[in-house]
Length: 202
Ligand SMILES: N[C@@H](CCC(=O)N[C@@H](CS)C(=O)NCC(=O)O)C(=O)O
Image 1 (cartoon, protein in one colour):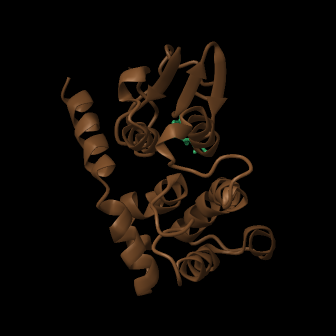
Image 2: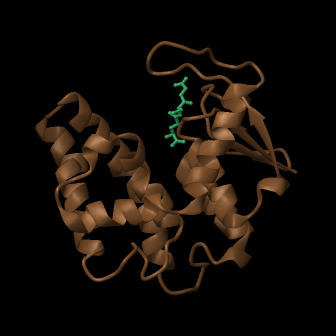
């Protein structure tokens, strides 16, 4: 039994996109929960077992998997037939794991620091900054359409996600800009947006 705790139009929408990419919407029990939002609206939901009241949370046969990158890795390993990520032992597996970890360890912190204008030598030593993230992306995409090669993968889904909700972060650099647009044309983007809209309407 696979249960996904999801709040529409939040970080967990990426897992709805992933579910469409993997074609597993029918296999997921998606529980819609409320969360406390950045603007002060919403409340933690007592039916959400996430220890911090956050989304996303996946529960598989009683075991909790939390943090977006971990859930993406868990599901792409559990449903390998869609070839949406390299499997253990395959080429690019190391890059795949690295982009997933880099997202949580560096991308989210630096995008938040950049958005609120926070600078400190220790932050820079530890994380570098969002410009360094953009340079890493530009360099990785200089000779391929997507991060792991010519095909869109779960690494692109995760790494491009902040640019879809925070459009101001899209740089002038056409390499990164064009990649964000290529990622935005995936049918799963619209399907997940439609799914969220249906939940919000009920
Ligand atoms: N690092 C976590 C972040 C999860 C997170 O912050 N989710 C937000 C939704 S956008 C949330 O549930 N916030 C509710 C709260 O802070 O109480 C992940 O990527 O899964």
